[in-house]
Picture 1 (spheres, rainbow, N blue to C red):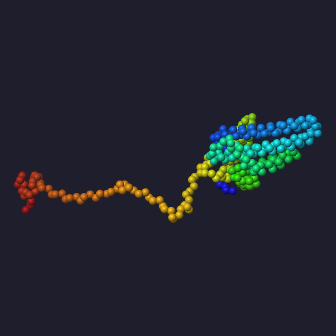
Picture 2: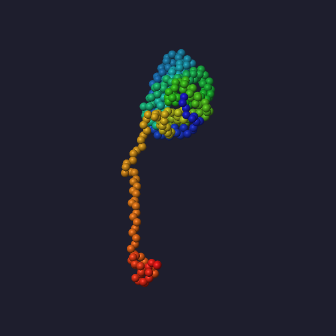
Picture 3: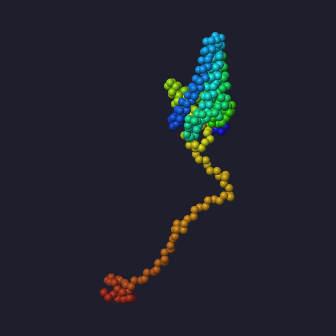
Length: 315
């Protein structure tokens, strides 16, 4: 099982789950509503006719009433409960699948609710042995049933990752239980507390006449998906709320036979040209001179100043 650097419990998973829900809340509300409608329709279609038959039979046959009749009704209730649980976990698989799809940044739809068929057998492989065992205990002793519910809370921590291991990790029933325990045992108490709190928040909507479950129940699936993302890992290129850096270049794929890229050639006019200036010619000598005595301007060929009469060159 490939894992990331496993952190402990992050209580921010609850707020992140709420943010994910608000981004596609209409789809989640419709999925939860359709799930309840299907479950109620199956329940009333199976359970109520059976109860009516049992009531009519007990009125005509007194032997069916009393403890024997109560046992038969309990057995029928158990069978109906198994049918309802089968339908529920088929739909739960679709809700987990929708949660992971949204976590990967994909758009979800109401049709995702019915995508849990491929996970149903493995999910029932986890749930049915526990449900049947507790149902038998309840038939034998209701008091013992409620007493055993308290130590059952201890397994909430490892149970946090079981269904995500099946839906996202593709594991079988036993393998998912082992992998979930392996992750949760590093901080058993905190994972147990987190799952209990998440479960209570998800079920808190029942106090608003049950309608609130449309907005709180999705947090149960999104919160577990977020915990799985950070504690186990989701092998995708892009996930909602998590930056995935691009992979580093694979230099091992380079071989010497490959031709390296050539540098771009410069155009001739882009190269600067330096022109050497021509050599300077000597300036010709001046044809005049100045008298050193009076300052008059005279021809350079004269020997005497024509102004002051003094000689221009010393003897």
